[in-house]
Image (cartoon, rainbow, N blue to C red; front, side, top):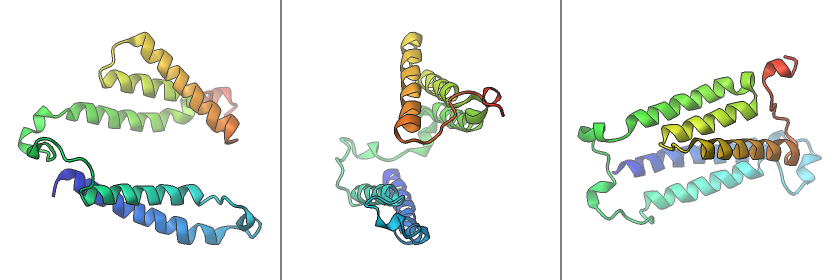
Length: 163
């Protein structure tokens, strides 16, 4: 089985477990007044689980467009040096650094740095464009989460928020 189907199988298992939790365990903890609303806190997890199950099954069953070359779908471990493993590892390290820097730097600075450094790792060298796109994306996401959804997300570093 090709690597994409193995990954789809793992995603299918995760989505089945997530869907089970969303459909059977999350709703039992709701107070009665919340059960009268049309949208519950478990609605979005249910949609995510169903979408993940459908998409991973489509890959497992081979409904996606087949690659032009027969050997293009498999990862050849003997040619591992030809893949951009260093880039992938740097991006994973950047994700870990983002998680650790989110509270000390605040959402805006940590997200800006994550997006700018991530695009640099992926090969973008137009620094002004990187900065503008990262700033707009970080600000837009913060505004949507904070103002539209009403979820407080600390935009500033922890020492500026009093703690």
